[in-house]
Amino acid sequence: MIRADGSPVLLKGLLGASLALNLVLGGVLWWRSGPDLPPVSRMQAHLERILPEPDRSVFQRSMEKGRPGYEAARAAVRESHAAVRAALTREPFDPAALRAAMAASRERWGEFGRLFEDSLATGLTAVSPEGRRLIAEDMARDSRRHRGERD
Image (cartoon, rainbow, N blue to C red; front, side, top):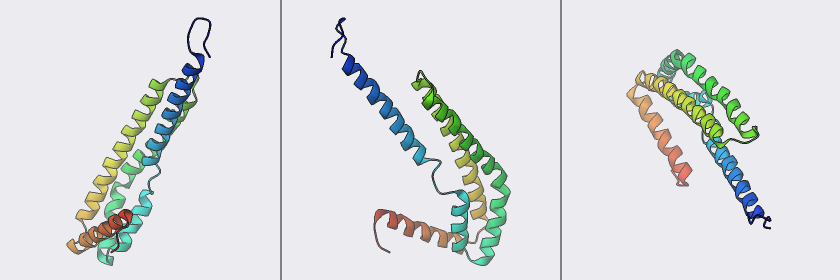
């Protein structure tokens, strides 16, 4: 369909709908790659099950020292989701506002990751070489499972 002034109405509508769909799908994919990863407590519990008892208690104590920092950063990640949702529903829609909200959320996610990794590195430093070897073996098994290989 073409307007009297010669502009293709249907084409513009389809392009606009395509752009909106791409933004939403891109946001969903980005969202799934970050905040929906397994909770840190589940990951920590998994590592603790692998470790022999003396290492387990040392690792737990060490991880607890870093918990306040990375939990606060994790809460900031959750809070940043509200700005992303608001940008998605704002009318008129502003792609720049959505990008800014997603960038802020990504920065907060990065800060959480940095703090958690610091805590994890400190905890694993306190673990015996045997404990670290057991964790490395578990990581290798998990990697093979995700690639479909057998042990």
